[in-house]
Length: 211
Image (cartoon, rainbow, N blue to C red):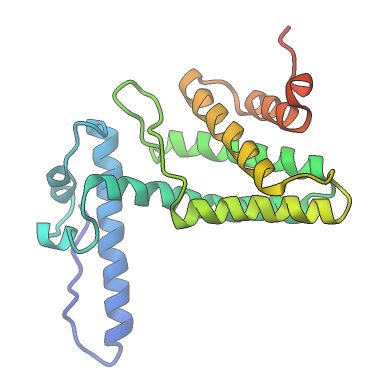
């Protein structure tokens, strides 16, 4: 059971303590929501159920979120925030554009598979991943990271001149959709990554063939 944090404590470090208390309360809500969504299912869960999973008053909840939909978006943003350093690391290590694409896909599929095992990816009542918004700050940051690295690769002559914005959107779209199917079907991450890498780099002609 998460503990509520007193925001009214006064001392010389009042500002810093207040910010830490706010962060702790927000984390308590997200932790409870993740547990409630996993136990009850997203559709059946309510704000009241989430609040019951904390030691916070209902009024405190609404200081941070207006609805369970906002809580869900915050959980998804948290996933994107934790993935972004892994993506950046792949960008820094890649020696070729192909290496960047494959390394980024490997990292993404391994990451979401692990997140699913931990219960961090919320599934609906039909055991399918719930669609997430793409216009949140962290999702935008992931998109910007991918587009920037594509632009760098083009500038260095490692990738053909193309619309980096469109390419980033297409690559991310393919990875997200295949990732959802991977979670539903239980396909191994290596197969999902290999398919996406071949498809993104070579179109249909580059996608691996089935035996």
